[in-house]
Image (cartoon, rainbow, N blue to C red; front, top):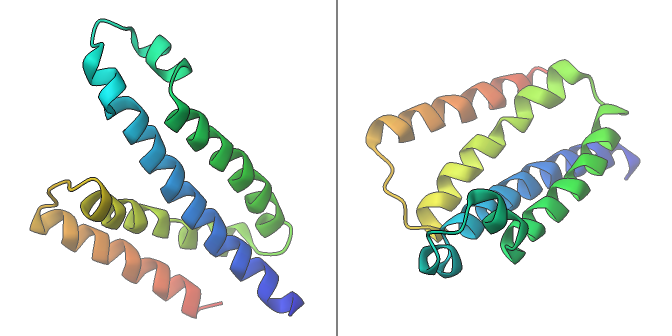
Length: 122
């Protein structure tokens, strides 16, 4: 089981990163900020529960990432962590209903392919 701890923690860092990014975006684009556009960015950030949630996810991610780095080579872990880019594109499309162009999908697939190549080389 201990051999699975680092890969599981790496997967968790990816999920936490994606979740944090979604919460940041929701915190800045939510109804509250739309209803009060005169509020400055800093006030919106400091007053947003979604952004506070994103920061909390990033804090947990930081701990997971340190655990990963204590067990895996950086040259392996960091490129695989780029799968968070893939996750953000997918989550943006699914949860935020953002339009994703074919070119962006192709680039996202290339990132995933690169991470797969590095993962298989381990």
